[in-house]
Length: 259
Image (cartoon, rainbow, N blue to C red):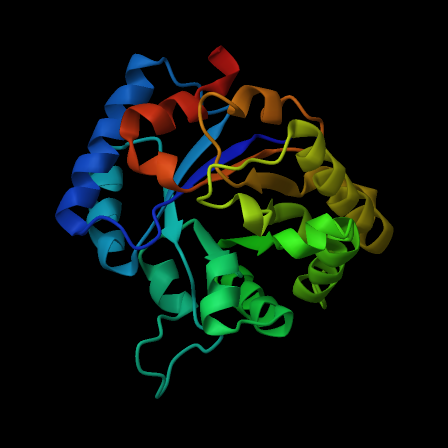
């Protein structure tokens, strides 16, 4: 089964709705200039809630070949949950992707694997694709327990899903020590953990699920290192942070296959 790499830019808490449309337009132009081939890598922007409607209007109105999505979601459909945003709300805005369990949500908001699992199930229920984040902190890496740690997270966040559901979702391996630090896991480091995740999926959900699930690497991805990372057999894309706020740089990452 051929897996189309997904290069998703996580804007985090950056860009208001006016800035967002400008950034998407610049990205579109940069991809066109670079002769973007969507069948070789899928480009997506993961934007703040306040930007989604503006980004949707621009992308759909101009028929721009960039997917878009949200950075989080509630585990509830609706109700007295002030400040939360539900999966049906995001689905109504035609979001394709929703990131769940990002390390910053785990660290700053105490999100557990159980909660992340519930959020992922909501995203799937409403016809969107979750990008489920897993990854270890530096202390775990130094102890050599990264695979054990990440597979425990993977088990928790995929609990109760069917093989068909797993085959169509995205898992993002983000070593926490490499996010926004300028440090980056070597291609071999990325392959070691991404390969272990795929083997776990194969054992728990079957070969078809393992062949279908896309596994991204995230953590200080740049155009200068993306080609080597993407050359690894079990790395199916990148979850890009700061570099995705620079349209030309992000386009170069999306166009890694032309380097």
